[in-house]
Image (cartoon, rainbow over all chains, first blue to last red; front, side, top):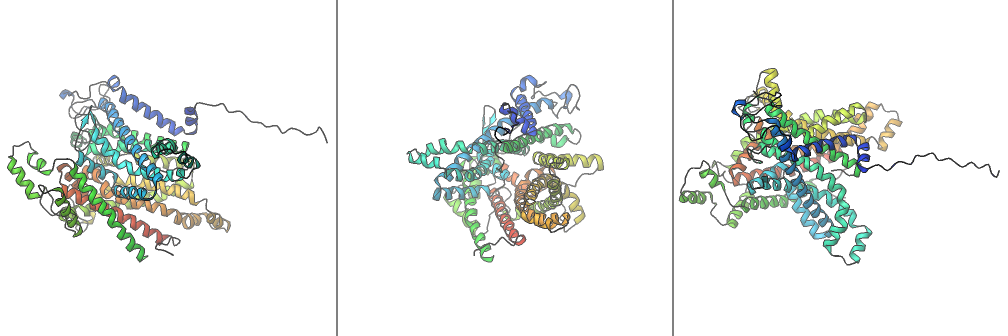
Length: 299
Length: 319
């Protein structure tokens, strides 16, 4: 029998290592599309001056409530301002506020959540009861209370208090999720090792625990950018967010628009589409990111 | 069960006390109060004495701890005080509007249940087919479209296709049910889209989970019709997580109707709240926030009780 052993032929292709971005695009085509949509918005927001055909503040009473035409792609509003230009500049407002409020809310939430899990016991109990209290309002109600509390404050043309108003309701939601994720991390041997090595609490939290909740953090950050854009639009619509004449999508749906939109529907059509597409893109991107990074994780 | 209920109701007290403390101090951290808005709002000149007098009348000149004790004792005795703007009792101001808001929230819940459960089930059963993709796309869009914008589109649609607009004056349901529903169905639909989307996504994922369970295989193995497997075995069990979402969204709507009420010009709780916030009407803001927190916590409790009722395996209150 000797010599007749056939070697089993293993037929496999060595997969080429592709760029992680390509891997993501191949596994999550919808995520890739929404990623492109986000990049387009980002581009529009950063280079608004170059893209927008008109000055978004320029009032032209000669072209009041003009219907969409080659001159004004999305028509004009009650002051004759070009809606297309205002939608482009609106991307800047929406992304700035969405990005910073989500970043602020998720970061503080993550730190609170990790600390709560790490210290455990009484500290954890107190933090969790406090979070219970904050979580017993709908997000928009809390945001409105913060608006009532802080009033308005602009720094470099950005409504800083609006960012706080959106970040504060986001914080406890993130803290809850991150705490749950950190509870398992706390039991890991390397945390014991770090403790045995005599590291400070701060060092263990920031160097050993926080990096391990990076995946849920990233996923929630994207999802809450969507929430923040929606919330900013709602607050601006109510007249309690961004103020005139700043171009902001939510604001474009209120004020004059609510008086004239029956005659000039393009006034509300395009800003509304912009909000929906932005929120849609960030939601979808967040979902895909979740499936890609951490299939078991649920926000 | 009764013991459990009593326990849960008692546990509400510390949380609500926390809310009361938080809201009280949040409003008073930053200087500025209603008197400024009320008397200086139009840019008119008012003497300092008038302002001081008004402050004294509203009790805003008292030290903060005195005001705090007043607020907390008022809460404990269910005396919420008067609106600082209209001087009418807060309970009266809220009562009129709460009815409308609750009705819209209930109607939106009914729409959501009727749309979401079939949609989510179909999507789960036809998982990864074009049906599923369409449903998923429609539902994820539902999370993105702002309800107030959808409301405006609905109004435009009604105007163009039916040449009809919902009336501006509110008719209570016990006065004229038809007129009432004809008015409130549109805002309910505007918020119902998002609501349905949230619930449908939950139904879909929980049906997918449940269909993997052993008892589904057992039911199929003993030859139960697939229709019955889905309706009796899968849906019954998958409905639980959906109920949580329905409860949460319902509570959310009581405060979350804020923006939609504005579009449809409905004088509901949300509109009152926005007015109170823009006028710095402390007593009114505090009371509405407390009410919303109570509704929120209570609906969580109701969800838990419904759980035990639907799923006999869930037992609360020991042993």
